[in-house]
Every structure is written in C-alpha cells, then in structure tokens.
Image (tube, rainbow, N blue to C red; front, side, top):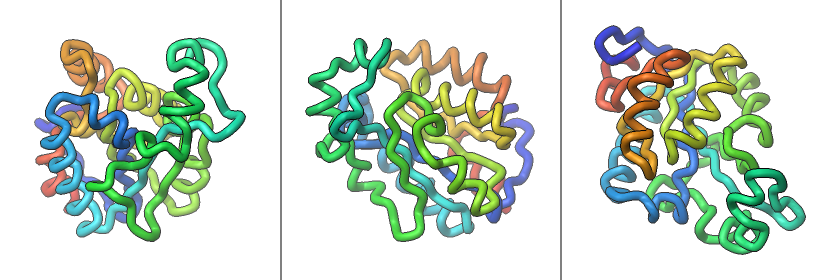
Length: 195
C-alpha cells in the first residue's frame, strides 16, 4: 500500500520503532544530518499524538561476538571493540535520545525481534501497529518487516526515514518488496494518518 490510500492509525495501539539510528551507523550515511532532523520531527509528532516510541540498537556485550555469516561479515575484533555494547558508536544518536518510558532494546542479530524482548514489551502494551524507520533498508528494515509480518503486526514503513548504503537497493525494496508485507509511505503522511 502507498500514501495514495492511507488507512488511519490508532495511536493507542501503535509504536514508532527507530532502528539502528546509532552514532556509528548514522555517521556513515550520506545526508545523515537531514535524516536525523526528519526522524527527530517524526518522533516529536508521534509522542504528541500518543504513539509509543521504541529504539532498537545493535551492540555486543562481552562473550556475545556473533558467529556464522554475521560474525564473518563484522569480524570478531570489530564486534568486541567498535560494535561493543558500551562503545560510543553503538549508542542511540544523541539527537534522538530516548525518554523515560520509551522501549529500548539491544540486539545481536540483524532483525529487531530474534535476540530481544521487543515482542514481549509490545504485546504488554497492546501494540498492534509498527511504524518503522531504520538504517539500513536492506538490513534491519527488511529483516524486521519479514519477522513482524509473521507476528501479525500491521506494518508501516516510513520510506524517507529508511536509507541504505546502496540507493538502488533501497529504491527496489521500498517500491517492489516491502509493499508486499507493509504499507509504505513518507513520514509527511503521518499527521493525516494519526487522527
């Protein structure tokens, strides 16, 4: 579904998930400052309309270095240093700092659910709709959409708050793949959706 046919969102049963907007990731994105400003405005709107806000970040504590293909891609040394859970690069960007009562989870895999208690926290608060913003589109966004769809959430991907290092991959996912399981709309459509 696109912004051409929006369905209203119930703020009381919705959560905006801001995924992997952490220092070390935002700093590698072209246009990071503009992306942060747009995300900050969207978070403020969500809060003002009664939507819960949640943050997902990736970081590895001592003894959590990933194995398998993820471990080979990141590298054990990087997981224990640059991607350590306490490293400045893995902290949620200061411009989007969580507030008391927000959901905050730390993951050790790509998607937002498999290594966190996010599902439990969302279900305890009655969340049925997820608004997704994330870096990157081909990573956390795609993985989370697939998993959350299987968990029966209504999904809305905020297209301009998702980016990927490869622009053509982002475009393909936003236009062709993600609409199969999620509504895809720009964040500018939220004021009308959150009635």
